[in-house]
Image (cartoon, rainbow, N blue to C red; front, side):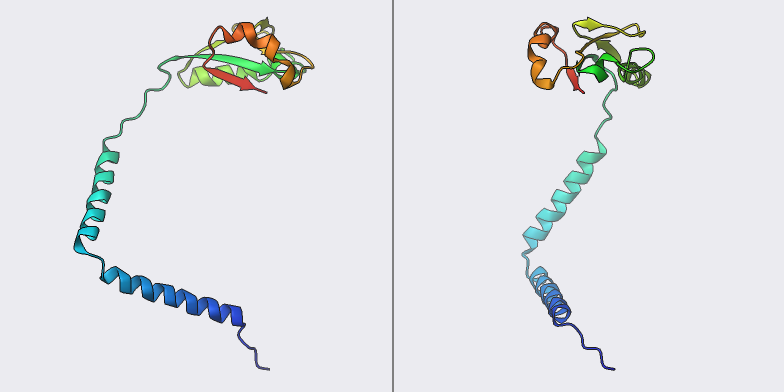
Length: 143
């Protein structure tokens, strides 16, 4: 039995070849200065990327404000730290200086300040956070 080639596939192949031929024909006619400028641009990018320096890790104090409801408060965790203690430990291990800030304190961790208010929605937290915002956190976690 004869299988016919689908028309859309044939059209697609023809258009692909047409685009390829036009591209090749046009590429030969580009002025030399365009090709030269393109090469110098690429070389400049390669040179500039070779002089990039790695940033220093942990060069400033992270003032983290954990903001949210019961998860931030640590509700349901055995030590009442929730995600805050493992996060702080991982950041400290990576070389960051960390200061957790907030209007509340709870949990077994040493630096246990936060703004986790049990049962609050995000739109209810504005009044509760006004005091903590004055401490100028540079990272606010909303959970």
